Length: 298
Picture 1 (cartoon, rainbow, N blue to C red):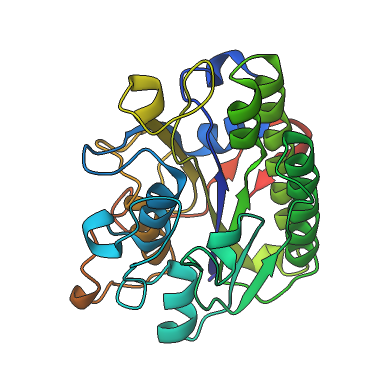
Picture 2: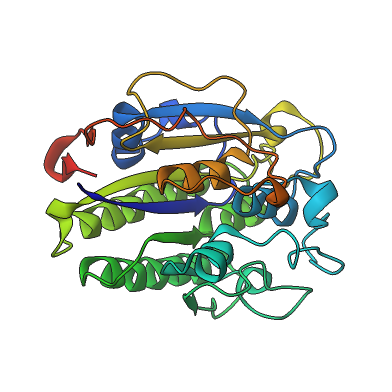
């Protein structure tokens, strides 16, 4: 029986409506082996990175986790922790969180969002510019891919890529933004390739979830309720996800719920999760993420 493992890749600020026109073969690979579906951010959640990412990784909404903006002061992460912390603390599993946005990973601005995973890696951008964030994401991807390919004992991990969002804020959603999305997809491909190089790959069954937090206006920026801003998306494939069937009413909180389900963990009712798994937990042979030179079992 294969060991179940989960990788969540968060790519900040990727517009759903632009994906069909972009070259994203690795995201397409995940979608072909499972699904790519629209998420509408609910009316009470600000369309900002802090609240949305908190909902993604805790499995509960803003009223519970208490993060309403990009400062995390007043949060309730001690009661509603992120999945990497809960799995490490309560289940004794090995988890990883890695990225470069300060309040996610450091005790600053009310953070960290990732309180106590088994392994945490913070790689800061050298400046608050699109170019510096691209360099940061490249380093984050290289470090995560190294850990994955080396066979690091890992049950669940979260990798954060922030350059796309930064590019939109500075330059809008024009050619530079579209190029940044395609570069983020290339980095996703590096992570998928690293999974396939793991020494124990033949005995592992991976669920891969790729998710964005919000969209952007054409001129860049978010925080309002326009359709392009309040629309996010989730793509996922794995042994419990039938290819070609998009779950109805996808929500950000479903990501953490599915992480637990994919690992065979029934949530304690006291966790009070707002999300539900993408599909009911069932026993199936592992699916294959199709596609080109990077094709192979995930």
